[in-house]
Image 1 (spheres, one colour):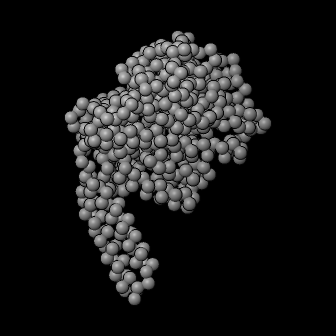
Image 2 (tube, one colour; image 1 turned 30 degrees about the vertical axis):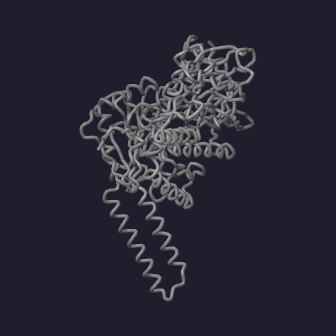
Image 3 (spheres, one colour; image 1 turned 45 degrees about the vertical axis):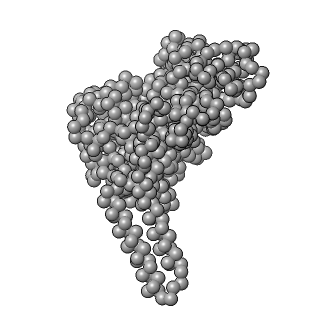
Amino acid sequence: MAATTYERLKLHVTPEKFYVEACDDGADDVLVIDRVSTEVTLSVKKDIPPSAVTRPIFGILGTIHLVAGNYLIVITKKTKIGEFFNHVIWKAADFDILSYKKTMLHLTDIQLQDNKTFLAMINHVLNVDGFYFSTTYDLTHTLQRLSNTSPEFQEMSLLERADQRFVWNGHLLRELSAQPEVHRFALPVLHGFITMHSCSINGKYFDWILISRRSCFRAGVRYYVRGIDSEGHAANFVETEQIVHYNGSRASFVQTRGSIPVFWSQRPNLKYKPQPLINKVANHMDGFQRHFDSQVIIYGKQVIINLVNQKGSEKPLEQAFATMVSSLGSGMIRYIAFDFHKECKNMRWDRLSILLDQVAEIQDELSYFLVDMAGMVVTSQEGVFRSNCMDCLDRTNVIQSLLARRSLQAQLQRLGVLHVGQKLEEQNEFEKTYKNAWADNANACAKQYAGTGALKTDFTRTGKRTQLGLLMDGWNSLIRYYKNNFSDGFRQDSIDLFLGNYSVDELESHSPLSVPRDLKFLALPIIMVVAFSMCIICLLMAGDTWTETLAYVLFWGVASIGTFFIILYNGKDFVDAPRLVQKEKMD
């Protein structure tokens, strides 16, 4: 079986069946899904009824079971990201969710409402930008992993050979994956970020690619998914690979990021920064060792760069991380703590060079992956930098972009693109492309985890910290605060449903959605908006005296502040918490 999926498809719909026709040259396969029995079979084109309603699609994301029954999810629009190694990379731009059932008459009013909510959850996940695929290339593996595979692996279908950590529609494809004969219709989809650029330095043209692969294990949103689970999977784990393709040679540099790998939580409670809580009874070493055992097997040596504050509420987490590394006593793991905010305070971001100088020799030892135009491996990457801050977003992305630039400098010199003594920082056109790409990577990962664009991207884009950048960070922080407290419960539920952490059972007598949501969690944003609006109106109104106007302002200001603190006293009662899957209680 070739390691490809069908690229050109047509969906034919009849009241009884879905027919997915392969339209690639020479193909005669038709995937048939019975809308009544849900049976999946393989047929041929002559079996498609002429009466079927037909339209083109660009891939099958999979199927999901909701209250009304099964639904088929297909890709209806795609945009081309670029090409490398003669493979086209696409971004899924739009989807359609098709019910197997012809009517909803079999549902009660409550079931109809629940089904509508579940559909809204699926649509919410699909509307988060960042789903990528290729019908001919395995996007889930790094160049180095692909170079170490057997001929048998190369012949496996894309679904069989994919790294399941990064197949976001793995749960949706479970029925197709059970039938090898239909695997060419099963399209593995990556979630994260991909950008590709054709670049030129010294008149030499090369392709530069950046890929961030988000893990679907322990996936979720910022404050509801922290630390690790019992299997050692870390929250917000992302593998980022930087690739260079020049004159037939290929080079790659891989880094990872992930939440501090101990059992800890940071549940929303209306405070700007909820207190991180480390579980006092969990077996931290067990989960910690599971995490790094798998990391060492996959990537080799682990150089941890912990960027959290070494004082205040983040200090216990830094200490716990350092203690775990010391207790494990593995020669494959090295720990480096760098208090990002302390070192770079007062806009002294030039001090990041302290960290780069500290790890320079280590980075040279880890090296990078390089294969020449003849396909011979010249060097291999012996390990990775595993970076993290609290969210593994803003500080982490800044450091990763600097480490990646240093690796790229060495790669381009070795390939002969850069002359001896030349610095990437001096190549203005390429530097602009490089910085913008890493800033876009930061924004993509941040939106997928925290709900807003990243902070500190002014430095990533320009190499400087600016006052405007500080203002934009303040705005994004405000939006994060609102989303983390008042909409992340729904976001977390949506991800859990999409990934199969929660399965809908229409026979279940008591749906979690039927539990009345306490609407008092809406009180705070309403009060804040009303109070702020009244203050502004009072200031704009020309009263009889300034004393009268001031009295109105003081009244509404004191009322809003007083109510805020009353709510804050028991803030957890006012946040939008998940309802489908109760994550392990860390507090």
